[in-house]
Length: 89
Image 1 (cartoon, rainbow, N blue to C red):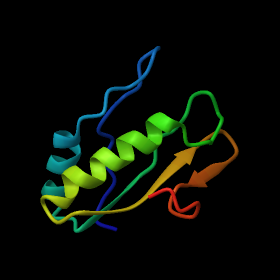
Image 2 (image 1 turned 30 degrees about the vertical axis):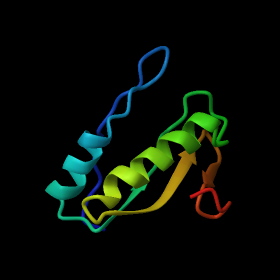
Image 3 (image 1 turned 45 degrees about the vertical axis):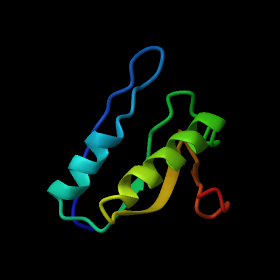
Image 4 (image 1 turned 90 degrees about the vertical axis):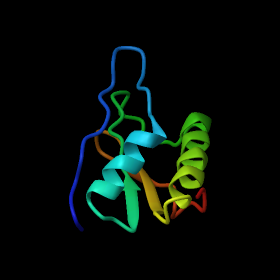
């Protein structure tokens, strides 16, 4: 592991994720792969359709700079769900 970066902070009604910022962070670390692990305030660690959609968008964007998405793990209060383990990547 090269590093951990907090790139976005949730507001009361959601979070905006920008692929260019994630790409910039990966390139800054000279990473060849990334793992996303958002912390869900609802404490429900289940991937939503929005999670699936942003993961697809991020995979496409990062592939253009040869960065692989290894996993998107949803973190709740007492549970974590790996989208890779569920074949959702």
